[in-house]
Amino acid sequence: MNNHKVKVDVSNKEGQLGFVFTRGGLREGAGRKSIGVTKKVSLTLTEEMWGKIESCCADNQLSRSEVIRNALESYYSK
Image 1 (spheres, rainbow, N blue to C red):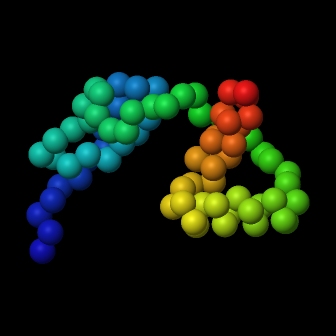
Image 2: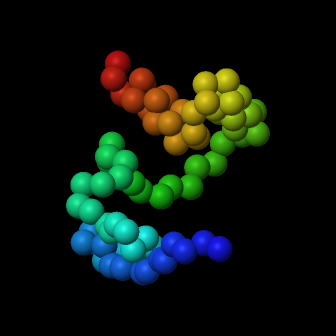
């Protein structure tokens, strides 16, 4: 039997709900550090280009976001 109790609490950040174990709680500064602003976009590319992105992801163990971000940063840093 699992004796872990779970409660729902409101985070200090943006009023988001979070699930926390009773032995701890949401802490300011906890978790992955932000690298920038997240904005949702829709991107239309050819099947060939998506294939290249997916291959790069698999070869380098990166997410699509990381591959696209790296490409944009490389382009704009010139």
